[in-house]
Amino acid sequence: MNIKENIEAIRADFPILKREMSGLPLVYLDSCATALKPQCVIDEVVRYYTYLGANAQRGDYEMAAQVDYALDAARKTSAEFINAKKTEEIVFTSGTTEGLNLLALMITNQFLKQGDAILTCETEHASSVLPWQQAGLAKDIPVNFIEVDQEGRITPENVEKAFVQYPNTKVVVFAQVSNVLGFNAPIKEIAKIAHDHGAYLVVDGAQAVAHHAIDVQDMDCDFFCFSSHKLCGPSGIGVMYGKFELLDQLRPIFFGGESNARFARSCDSLVLKKTPTKFESGTLPIEGALGMATAMRYLMNIGLNNIHEYEWELKQYFLKRAQEELQDKIKIYNPNAQGGIVTFNVYDKGQLIFPQDMASYLSNKGIAVRSGQHCAKLMGEFLGVPGTVRASIYFYNTIEDIDRLVDAIKDATVEKCLDIFF
Ligand code: PLP
Image (tube, rainbow, N blue to C red; front, top):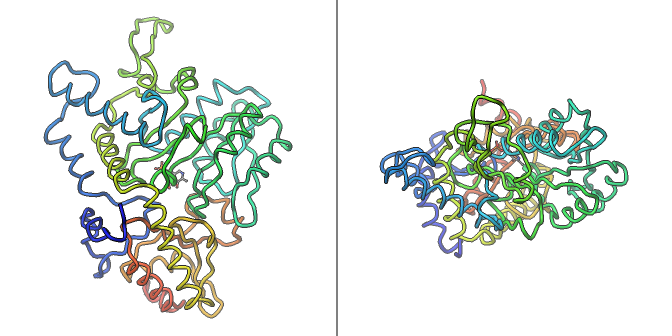
């Protein structure tokens, strides 16, 4: 679909874009935090509650069978969305963070031994660092950090170097797309390096899935986690993908009514259900799974490559205006990251406008952006600033949204930003 030609129709799909913020038409530039929801996703969630209603994978009546059918279809759509080889490679979780925590616990406890090590990256989101640090405590398994290049990119050369420095690395874990700088990591090359050294590759796909066509088979990653809410679906649901032979070897962390096929009084009587159901121990957020699948179909219909190109075009427009009109006012940290993430700070006569103050000022102008450390606390050390402002552009944004952002930045002063609070 040509997004530019259909932008009005696309925007009409998102009822929230009709609302105002601070008395002005909303400019939503915080889609990396969570994406807005199209009417079809909202309708699907409502359809579950108004028409389907039953629990999944338990009932023997027609309405329950309809829910089972819908949930199976949602799993199939999820597999298609990331080109998984088998539907059984899709485990529903509550989101990226839960998937990454489950993997850290299961892999550390079941696949690793004392002396092994984990490799991540200094610019990572907390959910690719903390779960492994905590899971590794009991076995004394350290988390080491890949250095990034000057711009903040993960390079295959640096991953290769890290394997020389930390030869006991057994797991490499990082985000395909950084939520702060937006660079798209060369996963396929890194998967090869990891596998050549006998390590697993776990990918945090939170920021990638909504902006890139994902092909887990081509990338050859071992695990890939993501959240529905970043791709226009409901919150509280996501996917933990794993290669079937690996998922099948792993024993779940949680147990309950849905994960067991049989149990008796003795501990060793437990017979688990097959992969992936053995990981889904209780009632799933069914409406979330159905809504997520609807969101995936919606994005696939627009075309992930079209989405990526459109965001990059709008970002280039922002960069052009910034270069022409904001030269002394703005420092942009990721001009070369192709996509919709623009991370910057604003200056007033050489003085930094504190990013949170800038975000509040923009809010007063009807513009929603994120500010601070973006859950990637080590990134601040890398950039050498206490925080940044992040505008994340998505396919429902327009040139006019970018104009409003540039005009607001142009007009910002330290005084005006502080005036909001007094
Ligand atoms: N990883 C990255 C790169 C993210 O950007 C986020 C969310 O912003 C997460 C993980 C966590 O996602 P969730 O809060 O949906 O679990």
